[in-house]
Amino acid sequence: MLDAKTAASLLGVKTQTLYAYVSRGLIRTAMRHGTQASLYHLEDIEALRQNRRGATPAADSVDRTPRWGGGTQVVQTAITVIDPAGPRYRGKLAVELANARRPFEDCVELLWTGAMPRHSLVWQPPPLPSSFGMLVPSSAELMQHCTTRQLFALVTQTYGAFCGRNPENAIGAPALAGRHMIQVMAAALGLLGAQPQFDLGREPESVATLLARSMRLPQSPEVLRLIDAALILSADHELAPSTYAARVAASAGGDLFACVVSALGTFEGPLSGFACDESENLLRQTDSVKTYLQSLRELVERKEGVPGYNHPLYDGMDPRAAHLLTLAQGVASMPPRARLVLDCIEAGRTKMQMAPSLAVGLVALAAALDMPVGAPGGIMAVGRTAGWIAHAFEQRLAGYLVRPRTKYVGLLE
Image (cartoon, rainbow, N blue to C red; front, side, top):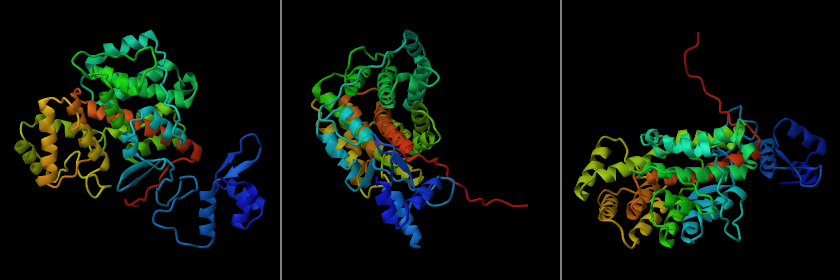
């Protein structure tokens, strides 16, 4: 951010001209804390300098005017970048964060604020109306037929409705609303088991502890560490379709509940979060490595795509999957079924050159910890909610409507 004098100097114009650029939507501003003066976005000033020189925009250039026009739809972000080592959150490699034995809440703070907290926070549980606590378990039979994304959307919307017509404002702060949504989703995973439960608890506890209790897993340090790692690696993946949906909702003025529900709807697709369920089903249905490899070959021959493998953003194995597979291999006492799952994944990698992605890594870890059916996709969605909210916050600060235009190719009379 630059002050008016510096911004005008870089552009080689008077401050009055700078103000004219702002009024035309070419330069975004923000108020300087404690004063009436404005600050100006450096990236917009640099883009304007390039355009004034008559340079041809690069292929990845950004249309910085309000998004009602043409130009490539590349969104600038300071949240996540993807390189061969995997995603980096605010410059920090996700795999290293997952290996640092820090709780998921620290990753959330990093994504939302840009800073890693010195001391880990334990979130206070949201105060739930007694009627909400009764309604959600009574809907368990309906929710048994849902995917985890549909389950989370139902629970999130129900919780928001109980908070009021404007739930984000009723809760009191955007970050607090975001924390509450993540906690409600984590508790909702308890509805997946044979004996559905929704137990949010009344005392502060980590999200990993809440998830472990919801899935009836041991709340040992090892289990909590692995859940934290899975959540951190799932937290964001740049501008995935679901993340873009969250940003569109935020740009249109939607509150955080609307942004997250919009993202969950997009996350349901077979090329997104639903791939986790498909990967899990494929591995659960197999009875041997030979059968699993045959299933993979049939999918390849039909050119249907193999769920959970060969992510287009990575040349080989997804680094997040590699880390999760290593963690799964190290689980001290895993059920026999988990060993078959790990052997199948390794055979697909070595004998068919299949490159595991995050979904397969989550399925492997879930099998090693004996999580209930649907848990891998649920953990991915809980973790990714942190990223969706981070992008919603960033989009609000950007202050423009994400509204791509179409190129009409139909008939004209």
